[in-house]
Length: 400
Image 1 (cartoon, helix red, strand yellow):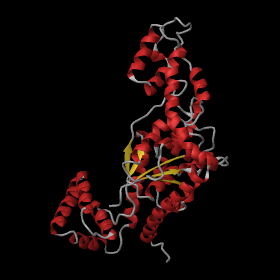
Image 2 (image 1 turned 120 degrees about the vertical axis):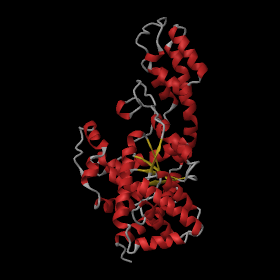
Image 3 (image 1 turned 180 degrees about the vertical axis):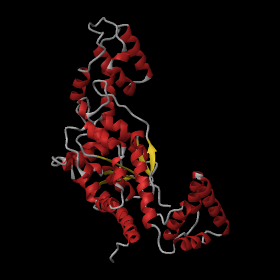
Image 4 (image 1 turned 90 degrees about the vertical axis):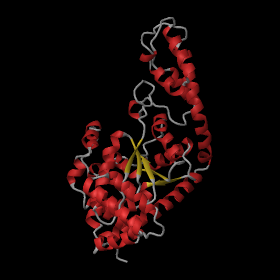
């Protein structure tokens, strides 16, 4: 088995807002303390819908990385890099495109859905159709076994799993594979070899998936097992071939619906956002102008918090005592709408304060960000080169 690894990326589409923080970045900050993590700027992915106007992508990429650092992503714990600066992504994408059935791409659930949502753009391009394939290359090139996604993105991970399985089946069948695999089993020692063989039988005859997990755990316990033998044993276990690309797993993240200023989900397309590092005066102005329960025409009209977008933000930023104060005060007209909005303003500004503080050194000296990314690009490329060496070997494409 390969080392556990988390991979996630974001497209550079401009300044990040609080919805990005609560929906993605807070999870990244937690994950970096639990697993080895790679977080990347998906600048090539931005071209799938922004191919006609790519000029702002580079500036947006640097700004987005500062937002990551401001949110608490730590470059000493996670590897931060830019997709286009690791050209092996493009090479693996090309090689995978040669063996990917067209029908697999056309059936990805988001393909037609996104075409309908973005009907103002001409998306009849290979880049848009092949978006899931490039996404798979991003994951598979780092042999990432954990990809944090919401439930709507699970089909993309399953697509990557199918690709890895197909690749391993096509190219993992080295000459004399089964003989070499049986020899590798003997190297486990008699006790482990018996256990491995039993677990292989349980899986292949009964489809027992827990048997695979137990067998992988068994292989992890074997000291000095060579890399090639480990790959053969993993493939032999599952009835494929030598395992070259790792099948990733979806690391399901809790759904986070960060409300926007109008009560809808916070989104740039709705124009209802507050950015991570927005200045205090702008935040205050925006929240004070938020719509409230339409029944509260006058100050002494009672209201219903459940019909007010401000209440949704209280559920994010206010404690139980404050929420009880809002419920009682609004329904009895004991507080006015501006009174109700002030704790939300205070909560947002308190959340943003450390972000602005963390961002300032990078704003003062952009070279610090460039150095972080340069180091991350180097680390990522080392990992990508290892995978591509094995991919080329398996396909017979290594000329040296």
